[in-house]
Image 1: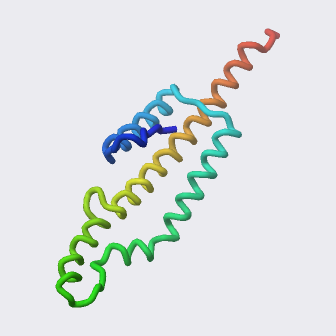
Image 2 (image 1 turned 45 degrees about the vertical axis):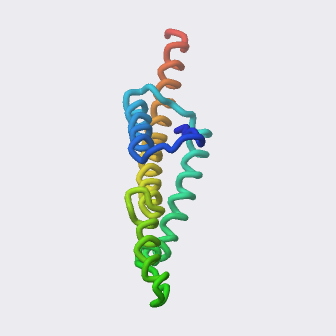
Image 3 (image 1 turned 60 degrees about the vertical axis):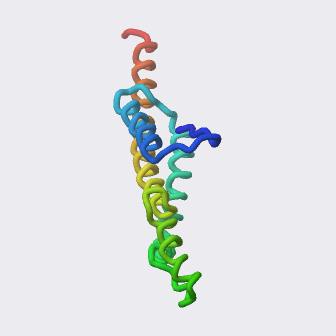
Length: 131
């Protein structure tokens, strides 16, 4: 679907742009997938979206500044631990971006499946003998 080279740090903008390109390609009829393949992709997307939904409570906890105590070290660490979870490259930000990307991917796959059906039907009509 979307390839991200593990050797580089792809930004959220790059991933979003790739997904937008996939959605655009499907909408323009440039991307098609058969029902079997599309359903497999949709099942994987739904499974991950369900998992993300179930993590809402954990995400709320991670979004709060941690209670590390009152020592000097913990006082210094608290804002940084919170920042790692919530800044523009933070864990929670990445999970939110993943969820948005999966929703876009789900829509693109559905359109691509429709594209495949239309191409299949058109090809069948063209190959059908004239009456």
